Length: 426
Image (tube, rainbow, N blue to C red):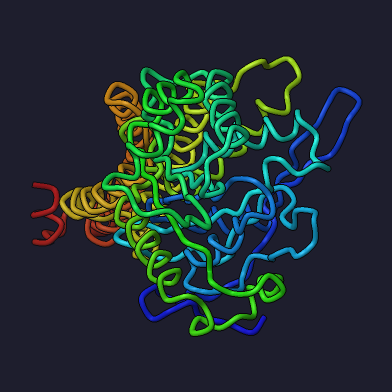
């Protein structure tokens, strides 16, 4: 792929798209299939993770804006036919660092592709709502009844998700008005909600109810001929309308300014926990017995998974650090034993705290279990040192007896005064 940077004002991101999920039709319905390569990419992320997902109607420049987030015209595949190009979900294979977090860009299949099955479309949208930090909804700048009905459907789909105690698990919502040709209103959010209210007041109310963070950005037409738009991945920035470029840059900048990590309750998700959360959500969605996606259930499974991984890596770290005493050879002095244990415990605890997630009660419970497990390991090393020390003392005593006491007890030496033997006997 020949890189085509968008502008100097948006950092250019190296990498390529990779498929995250697709679907297959089964007798009992549609099943989501996750790609192992994409999961491995996610699991290698140790920092807090932020997920930006671009959704919306097919053939409306959705994938092009996903590329703009990466500072490029090319990247995610763009289609020039009447059919949508992205099938399932693609992610950028090189999550990039931004203000303390790794950012994953997701390009989602168009939500109204005529070749798309409705059950699949609903499942796909439910999953995007559950896993995103920021959800970018890409629609036509002239908001019509069709767009409003799709937005209202989106709020109805939220009802198919069982939330935790509040709706804060939902992503920031960004509505992107494409090819917007009207005069800019003072407040795009008010303008947008006002348009929706005139057609469907419930849709406007639901949007503001569910999405606590809600922004609207308008982008004008790129200012090129229709035939040139079929190859937007190849076009150069200076061929585009400068106002279009400026508005894209402003939108991308604001989206990144408002971007927060993906949270699980009050804890940020790393790539490992996010991948587990994603797999748990997909397992629920694929289960024909489930009528809703239970976020609390997915959270609980992910929290326990993270704790188990934290136990394994932290106890292994403690074990490896304590094993240095084996290299020196047991026994060692109890003062040295205490020093080594304290250092190993602090490092293992730090590693453990960095990995566990959950509410205050869960974290306290995990920490107690961790202390119990560490105590069990410490006791094992204690017994090794104690056994080695007993053996050392026995061998040393035997050596002293053999060298200094036993000779004095032989018949020919029994009445010979030996100062060393006398001192040892005393």
